[in-house]
Length: 306
Image 1: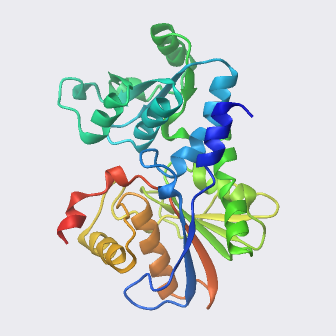
Image 2: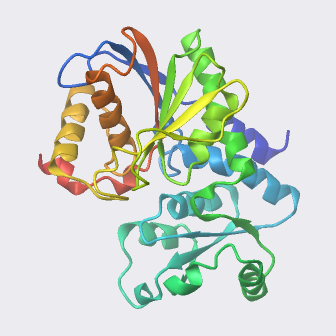
Image 3: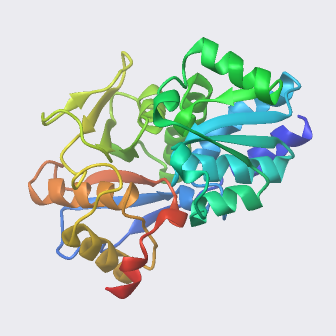
C-alpha cells in the first residue's frame, strides 16, 4: 500500500456511529443512530472524503498532480477538494460558476479554497453549463495543463465506490443490519453508494436538499437486492433555502444532543426523519441510521442566535 492509500485508509472509514437517545422535541418510536462522517476530517466535509478517496488514488496512479473541478460560490465540494489537495500534495483548480464574482471580495468558502492553494477561475453561467462538454474540458486542459477532472459535486463511479463503503461500516459497528439507512441528497453520489451496498433488509432513503418534481417517493437506481428512494418533501424551498421552522428544529437538536448540524443537507434530512416518524412511516422499534455528511463550514450564523 503506497503512502496516499495508507493515509486515506486511516481517515476514511473511521467515523463513529452514535445512538441518539432522545433526538427530537417529542418521542418517536425508532432507534436513531447517526453515522458521524462529519468527524472524518476538520476541513474535508464528511461524504466528500469518501467521494474523493478513489479519485485521488486514480489521479496518483495516472501520475496527474493537478485536480480540476467545478462548483458554485458556496460549494462544499470545492472546499473539500482544496483541503484534500493541500493535505495530499495535489495542485487544485476550481472552476467557479459566475464570472461576476471575479472582481468581488471572496466569501468564506472561496477564501478558504484560495488559502488552501486552489487556483480559482471564474466563468460565466452560460459557459458553466458546458462543464461536461468534451470540447470545453479539452479547452480547460489546454489552458491549465494535464489534470484529473472531478465532476461538480464529486459524483462519479469512483465516488460511488467510496460511498458504498458506508453500509458495511454501519453493519460492523451496529452488529446487525439496519432497517433504514438515510442520507441527504445533492448530486446523488452518497445515496447511490448506500443503495449499491445495502441488502434487501435495508430500505435506503435519500432526502432531497433541492426541489424535485412533486411526488412522494422517487425511485433511485436499485440493485437486485436493495431498495432506494429519494424523498422530495423536505427541501424547505430549494437548495440552500431555509425557514424559521427548520432553523428552530436544528437549534433544538444541537442543544439536546451536542452535535452541530447545517441547514443545507443534514438538518433537512433529520427533520424529514422526524416528520416521517411522527406520521408512522417507520415500524415501531425500527433501527434507522442517518449519515451526517458534514459541510459545517456552511452552517448558518443565524443558528447561533436562536
